[in-house]
Image (tube, rainbow, N blue to C red; front, side, top):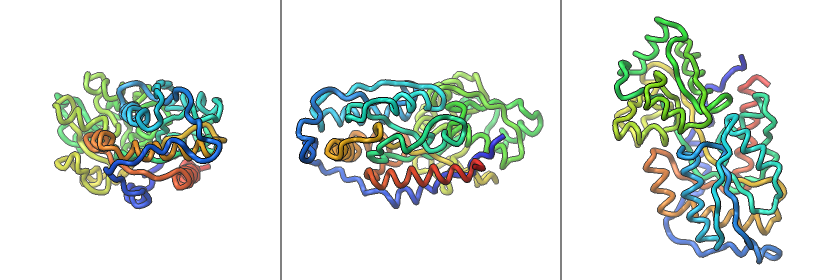
Length: 325
């Protein structure tokens, strides 16, 4: 088995690199520079490589509403789940680089190429990183496991008997569950789904013993009593779940999380790229988007195109080392 990453780039580093979001309104800057005056002249398809209803999908749909106002055209969200995001990413890589196809990319865009998938960040023009999401582990509300220590103890007593759902093979949350098992010295039985939303639904319904997913997908279920989050995979307690201990507090040093970037097929006209990035920056700074991200316990940020590209490239190189390539 390939070695899993022990942690992502520290969330603090990503936040430090981010441009501070402002709630102050920005003028519609969709006109671009010379050569891009007519963009966009038609509707734009906003792809998401996940099932509807998850954190990545909600990110796309909320940004889409804001982008419609900025760009003056309809933004149609198109879900293409499967293969830990590879199905949607492969589809978008083959589309025309005309600005009329964009996608919200999860962290897996920097991971999948090292796990046997034909996914390369160089095939995309990144327009900005728009949020970051800590990882969590949660159990059904009526679970007998009250703490992470309880869950680990059960796995030690009966290796392979504790089931943990995740967002699919090759996903960051599969990596998180595997890393927790490695650190705790136990064997969990992974149960993959096509995205975080169905993985969480499986836990809510008691189909699995636990789920590893982003805080944006587990915190709401924790709040309304459908799930109980046992731990967050952060260095310090998450503001959205202040009463939930970190995995480190339980003795398991696991720090792992995700981020979301907006991108398009590589080769965008510079003027079109400028128009899209400006609109995305404004959308990511809107009160509606910030409220969505913060309400789920995630962190709104904006890292613009060139810096975002550098960051994703660095992540891709770092995962090469972590996966032993």
